[in-house]
Length: 261
Image (cartoon, rainbow, N blue to C red; front, side, top):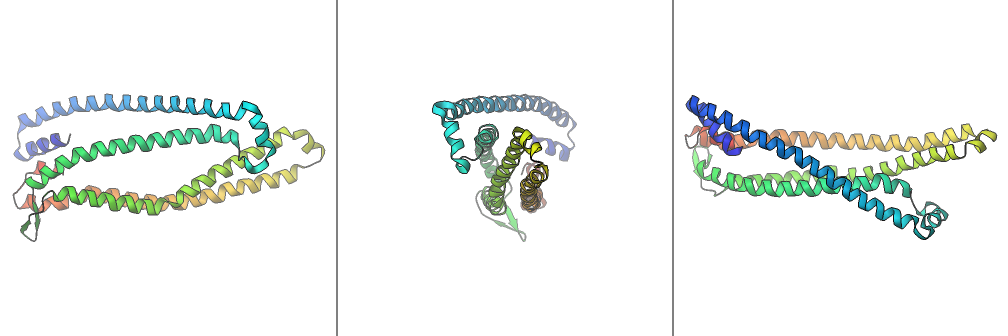
């Protein structure tokens, strides 16, 4: 699509109707292939998720139920923090996020390799101009993209790192609240006989208060991350044009080359 963008916008600049219509047909074919790939990529991702989760769940259930481990863990009190929640929610989260990170990393590497070749060629076709003078910096678009990505990744890490602890505590608080709700249901008769509803209500609201307070922390941190990532993404749209614009206005590259950047 990157090469197509070059040809398409050059056809617009040159007012070439035949090339314009041909590129529209070409685009339709390429997009159809991309849609098919996207559909089966999602299908394969979901298949890997459920297969991996099934294997891990079977493994942890075997460890938990063999040799009365579940009973001995119960005797240890708080030493075993909600094993049922670990097997259900945490295994799912681990599988989903690990696959997401792994496949995202693979996609980023492939994209990086592809765009290094494209950006290096564009750097030669549209050399960097500053104050009307050409600056001989080989592959300047590649170096700028790498530096820009590294800085953006580092800043995202700095802004988003506290969210790791907040998410972990949210899982704990949600599990504790759910566990206490189950405990009330299992001991409903004793609570009713002893008129313990007010005490249980206070205890449950206290547990839920932890959920709410931590969630507010997640909201505030997410707001900061979103503000940064939205600003970074919008800057990513315009910055390449700013870099290539001097070469375009100097007549060193066509509109297609500028749009390709």
